[in-house]
Amino acid sequence: GAVVSQHPSWVICKSGTSVKIECRSLDFQATTMFWYRQFPKQSLMLMATSNEGSKATYEQGVEKDKFLINHASLTLSTLTVTSAHPEDSSFYICSVYPFAGPNYGYTFGSGTRLTVV
Amino acid sequence: GQQLNQSPQSMFIQEGEDVSMNCTSSSIFNTWLWYKQDPGEGPVLLIALYKAGELTSNGRLTAQFGITRKDSFLNISASIPSDVGIYFCAGQLRGGGADGLTFGKGTHLIIQP
Image (cartoon, rainbow over all chains, first blue to last red; front, side, top):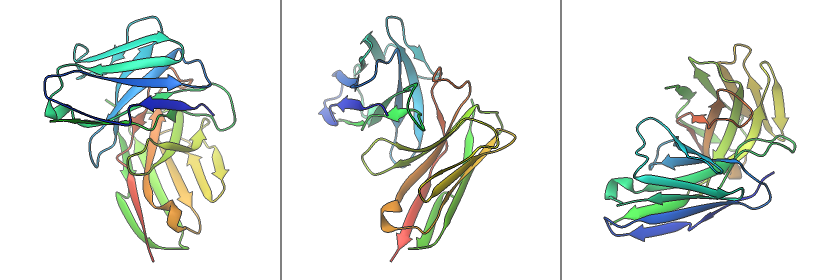
């Protein structure tokens, strides 16, 4: 299956600053990547679909100006949390969908724990 | 939006017991998937189901895609300590990787010694 690398694994930032999270597909060219957010003891919620070479598609209720997504290449998508506030503290996870291989399905990165202080 | 109702919310079992959990939805999904998530990690795919009625096994795990395409179950046989974790069902509406996943709320599996 696909290997997805996410960086950093954790980050602490001050309120009002911006944080960039990278998601790399190491062995698979992904025209589409997905970003999820998971609050403590809750499920994963889809935030946006990242499309290579075009604008991301955001889910209802997700502020596109706050969560900037850039998918400049087939192996890299970035999520920038702008003007972060404590309520943005969460676990952010990206995923890709490899189209080949046995029992294939969405493969997830290891996640980024964001803490805004 | 779509919602997946996953139950039970948590399970306390003895090592060696079998486990069963399920998900239901008011919407039809074209793909059902089951994931396991350990603390601080991303979800890991256990089983993917692509056809209504499909029954698929992965070692001690067995999952089925309901005939109505609105439900799925996951069974774990002869549980072992490393099975501890949170299990999520997830559904995809259109299939083919075109859209993201809708997740259930998870089943927290706890194995008592």
